[in-house]
Image (cartoon, rainbow, N blue to C red):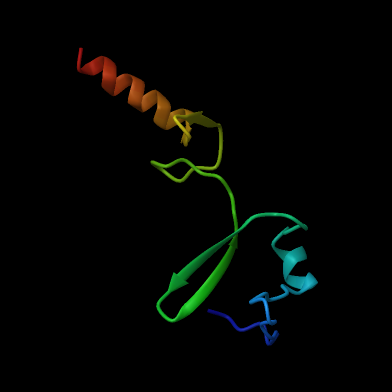
Length: 85
């Protein structure tokens, strides 16, 4: 991981401000959802992008039973279902 040299304190409510330079660099706007990951002893913040539950693609998503599936995986599922007939 590369250090930015930016240090911020956690406030009394547990909040940390993400500097404007980083928000601009990663196209994070006010009210955008952020995912929080843990990697070993590190906390990683990432702008949330909905993705396919099978392949991780963020393009051509279809919602099915409250899950997101890309068009390609949906087609693969249709084909595998037809193959079983």
